[in-house]
Image (cartoon, rainbow, N blue to C red; front, side):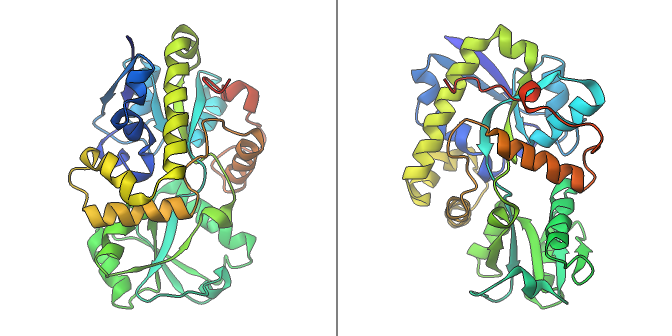
Length: 307
């Protein structure tokens, strides 16, 4: 039995759009590959290159993690090709807009003159939303308000009309939507285009040392992603609920269905080059990456298990 240690960051990193590896475990797909995956956590999260799970991988306390390829790109610009993405997970922006009332014919231009409460205050997500506004000439016509740090308070403010929209990942919005407090208005996935928002990450040398185990991992994730694409959210929730013990059941179904409908889950384990390059261009445009230092796909992406 081969073994891999998977550091997920802190508890906040276990979002419902990161369910593919949980599903693979639940379905026995790792076991069928003669692979044991041990899930571990860190004391801090992974919002930056210095976040909890990345140092665990760099120090070899863990074999792999899951996070944004933007972290691998930034690490390359600062330190070189030490880290690589090797398997896809989330293939589109998982952020959504929500409001107090339904808007079935919503267009991005409807944000003109409105107040958007950025509940999450997550750097790259906020910068990406600003990029999206700029792409539609709305950068000076939408008031983007930083969240208070109290999510319940912010959702209540939108429900009460103190702001027009809430901006956050569906993972956080789904409980309020399932409770009838807010309504999902639009996914940012299609608006931003397909990008490898999240992928499985490891050290390049560890990927070589444990190539067989990583190939087995990727094959299991490939099967899990296919399963997600061919089953409804209720069936998916049945399989992964025990990995989210404090997450309300109705919200889990609501959130997973929204992610499936928006095609947020990757269709397979391959990370397409054109999507990686589109993402790197977007991240350069918003100032996350140094545009004078291109990030090479061939050096930062390996398709372990995609053969």
